Amino acid sequence: MFMDSTIEDAVVKGYFGQNAVQSGYMGAKLMSYAVPKKSKILVLNLANKLAITRHLKNRQKGFLDFMNQAGRSDKLKTLCVDIDITAEREPEKSLARILVLKSQGLLKQNVLTFACVFCTIKL
Image 1 (cartoon, rainbow, N blue to C red):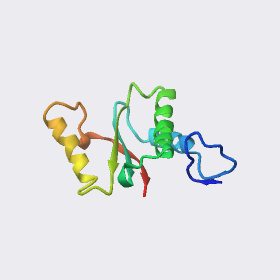
Image 2 (cartoon, one colour):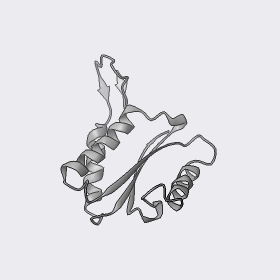
Image 3 (cartoon, one colour):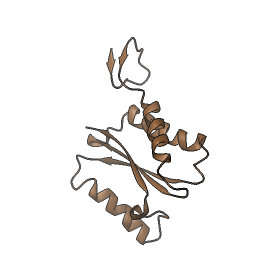
């Protein structure tokens, strides 16, 4: 019996929890009502010791799937970032690094211009 997560390639006889892909899909659908075309969206995966689990990635997949299926992927720009929230000065350090990359011309997106943030979290 698995609760809220599974082990890859394991035989699952029972599962209790959310459908992570559907959760991400629904999050993107709701967000699409409020986000103007040609907006930028920051997708943050926050986890302890970068234990970015499959359900976090599935939630991100559902989010991106909606954007692609709704024909919004060419109108919206997304930046996906995995952050270890147990590391010192995180998530501030990673977000600051995005700003440094932008200021050096190495990143075309600026975190300050993101219309919204889609965040997955595993504590």
